[in-house]
Length: 150
Image (cartoon, rainbow, N blue to C red; front, side, top):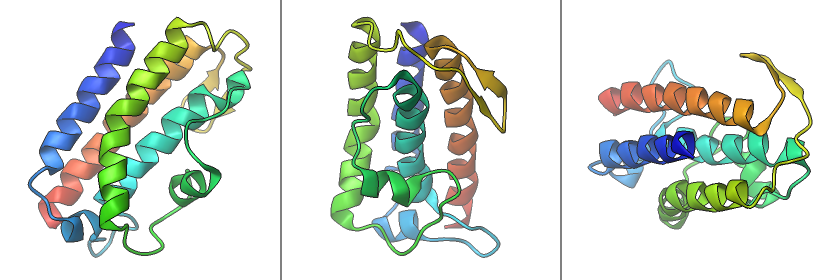
């Protein structure tokens, strides 16, 4: 599906944008902000998984502790380790490939409608993908702004 491939392109671009940053810079929370670049990257993982898999009754490809660390409403509780940063960077692309395979296999046929505070009702996996696309762009912009400050 083209929209899923577009999500992957956004993530590839984000990885390129942050490739010159140190792990210390990725963990820096600038004055006046409540998160950092690596939190935004982890948040992309949990949001896509939560929005697409949970309402369809499917298991996410992330563990609960990771989900809780980066879920909506969370904020960095401390530095993300070098190992976890490397894992997040890898998973940003891998989980889009897994999602595309799951989508192609028909895994999301039983998607239960729900309402988000940002865009109203999400009533299908297609609407979920559209929302994730919007959400990824939003956090890509946050990461770009944060990069200028670190």
